[in-house]
Image (cartoon, rainbow, N blue to C red; front, side, top):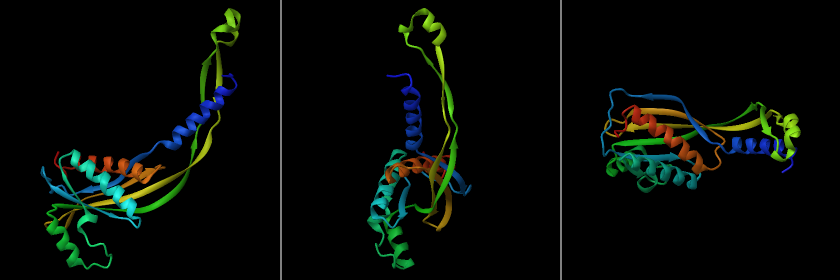
Length: 207
């Protein structure tokens, strides 16, 4: 490969890696210190999404994560009325009949765009061995600079609230931010790991 092309390839790879990386951060959280979960609890997952496909993606990812920590998941779409016009009494009855101890309700709060500056970098590239002794001496390490650039990020803000079915009180709440998810599945996997991790730390979920 031409030495002149190496800096260009490096810059492309760096930009590609940055655009593909997905990270979620818990930016706000609250938990009821008086509530302590138990092993074998049942949690209903409710995704407030207009897109049915995204709803099922979220339910499936959340269910898999809960099962891995020995919490029995109940997908809201399988037991709750499909009509948004269902009254409160009907919803409460469906939740209680499911046997759930907890209900996790998640919704997309906002999608923001932000511009961030990715600074350039400097690295050294060794000269090929065939330069010989004098060529190696004068060309042993060439300094290569890659320019900085601006990148537009999409930040997805998602809120998850967990309620105690018995008294209908909030026991945990968190707001997450996810940067540049490639797909709904990608976003769900990233957010859920952060959310469940904090629920375990807060003892809302017993591990």
